[in-house]
Amino acid sequence: MRRTSGDRAQRLRSTVDALPRRTRLAMLKGIVRNRIVVGAYADPRTGGVCPMLAAHRNGGRTNFASFARAWDTFTSARRPRLATKHELGVLRSYLEFSLLRDEHGDESIAGLAANLRAERREDAAPPPEAERESADQLLPSEETAPIRIHRVAEPRRSQPAAHRPA
Image (cartoon, rainbow, N blue to C red; front, side, top):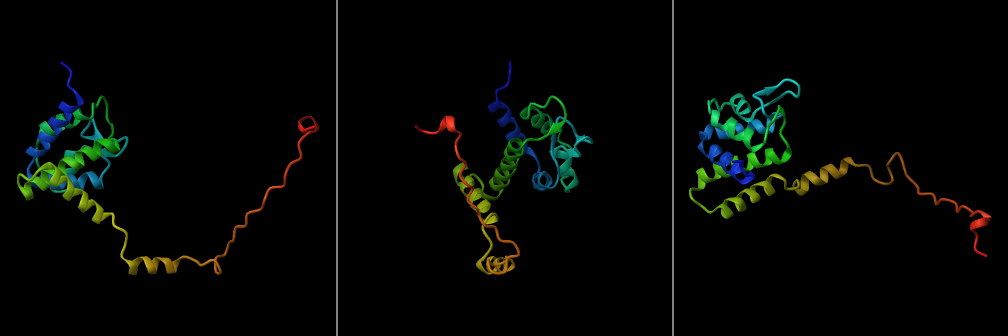
């Protein structure tokens, strides 16, 4: 029987939930700091490592073979390759939800998702006005800019005699 993508995702999520908290924290740091691969523990060709090795390098020393199987099954790994943005995004969200669930107990998934979105908005918020103004001062003004670009209208080309209206 072939597994559906929903089954594979659920298995990965369950495996992430079973990881010790320190390993989940280390893995979250590791997937940001390293190139992550699927289908191998490490890939010297790309310089990437699996999420468990990334966690190990960031202090989450756990031997959890079922995570590696769930990760490779989720990604449909046939050979070592770099993980896609989508695969990394799913793993990151599972790790973040699992950590939030530890902090907030049995709060609803919708509530956890709202908290996570709010945290991401704060991380991506534009700099405060004071920082923005100092950055604007670094940009040259129109009067002091060393290069000015002027648009020149292209001359009209005359049409050949055969295409001129009669």
